[in-house]
Amino acid sequence: MKQNIKAIALFLFTTSFLISCSSDDTAAIDENTFGEAQLYFDNGVNGDKLILGASYTNSNNERLTINRLNYIISNIIFIKSDGTEYVYPKNKSYFIVSEESGINTINLTDIPAGDYKQIKFGLGVDNQRYLEGETAQQEFWDYATSLDMVWTWSTGYRFINFEGTFTSDSNPESINFQVHQGSNSATDNYREIMLNLPTTARVRMGDKPSIHIIADANVILDGINKIKLSDNINQAGTSAAIMGGENLVKIAANTQAMFKVDHVHNGSGTEH
Amino acid sequence: MKNILFRLMAFSSALILLCACQDDDSYEDIPVNEKFDFKIPDRFPEIKQDINSNYPTKWGVALGRKLFYDSRLSKDNTISCSFCHEQQHAFTHHGHDLSHGINNLEGIRNAPSVQNLIFQTDYFYDGASNSMQMLSVVPIHNPVEMDETLPAIVAKLKQDPEYVKMFRAAFENGEVSSSNLLNALAQFMTIMISADSKYDKYVRNESGGNFSSQELKGLELFKMNCASCHATDIFTDNSFRNNGLPPNLNLNDLGRETVTGFIEDRYKFKVPSLRNVELTAPYMHDGRFGSLQSVLNFYSDGVQNTQNLDPLLQQHSKAGIPLTNEEKEALIAFLKTLTDYEYIKNPLFYYKT
Image (cartoon, rainbow over all chains, first blue to last red; front, top):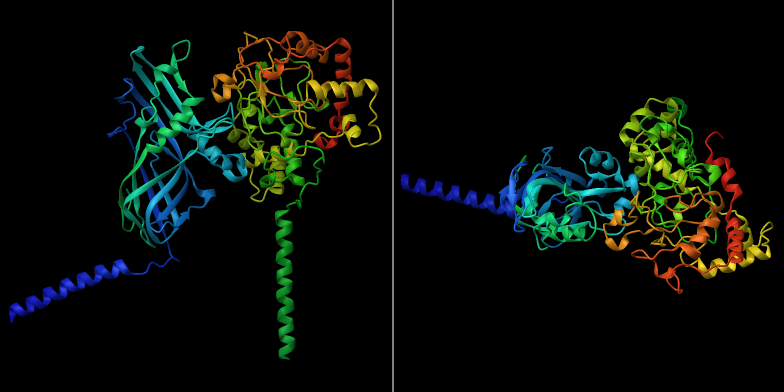
């Protein structure tokens, strides 16, 4: 008898567990409800953690000490497995990630409940948005200015501000480098980046998935295109600057592989 | 009885509503805004800027005009836009080859004219901006022009009740903000259209548009020799070209390359509009020529074959455009028909009206 009770209890326990599991999975998602999501940008360098002031050697045989990594993330889109997209409202969809300022998270609200399998975002500011001027950009210009993400000698945004010092065979003494990625009135270097999520991001009312993205600063110069800082040293030999020309187009191609989603935390109130 | 009560209630609630409305109005005291009425000239090329997202309004234009003439846009409150863009010279800086700004610092370029901007794709001699709404950022921040920042200007203007009132009248959100500041300037520049010169009257067959035989000859010469770059009725094709000016090594101005970073853009500068050219001396990006005569002498005899020299200037045995003295005089007579006296006198573009 005692055994029987135990067996029944076990049976009830497991079935209730099973039922609760299956009911969760098949429960219709009420698409008229909304939840939140978070993108967490974990900056690294070729598999190592990015530590400002620390040095990294790349495959161009140059040793970079990185002092700044800021970039603009924009136009975020959530994509379900059936391909349907939720486009986050454009006028709220411009953000800056800044290692030095400790800004690594983007919090998004009012996303329709759903199971999302991919995300898409822009690196930089799209030309359409830029040409719409300040009306459309709201106060983003002021915000970007405060984080050193605008050019003022020409009118444009820095999509990536990547700075520090470096040494190479041609300059054993370290000198400054500045990589300012952006568009200008000759080339549009805004690019969209599409990322698969290894696990579904479940957006529900009260649930806030946190999508953990690893950003690899190394590929900016050392990706499918190899860009040597030592080829971009000024005539006086005092610093290397990449702010225009073909290099910006190459960097735009490199940064297609700059981001990948490492994992997704699901649940309510998840913060990275 | 019931009926009367109902009527009474309806009446009193209507009264309350009315009172509330009136109250609101007198409290806010926002002047009524309306679309600014301006005309796009028929013969002009299509509008190249998105003016609908920031369409000029009565108060937006008035505010933009006030800002254009306000030296608080510079760091030490001494330099306004109008300092280098004077109306009587079609909004250029007369008497200076290189325009100067704050602390009497000198730039490396001659201030270009402000006119017909919405028909253009790029601004500044190197194309530093392709957006009319954003272009004011450049002179405001340039350390030798105004050396100021948008948030600092906004902080100054917020202290001025008249500006607070005008921003409120001009924009839906009513804020004194950097975006509204740039938008107001853009609205003002949107309506700065010059299309009433003798040439315009000539092409429109209006009175006052009779060309002399010399002017007609100049027009023919212009069409043959100049109009491929100084194209359409705004007299620029919006391109960047190296016209063979010997580089001034003291300035070492690389032109368009400064913006794009492409070596094939070295020494290329934006083809300027020739409207009001009689008034916009000195000429060229560095203001090296004091007269139209000198400009034409350069094109006939001074063009140097530097890197990226425009192919259109290499069609003859010698680089440049062969012109006799008589032809130059005819060309100058034609160029003077591009002067728009209405534009330089128009009180709409002057703030103390």
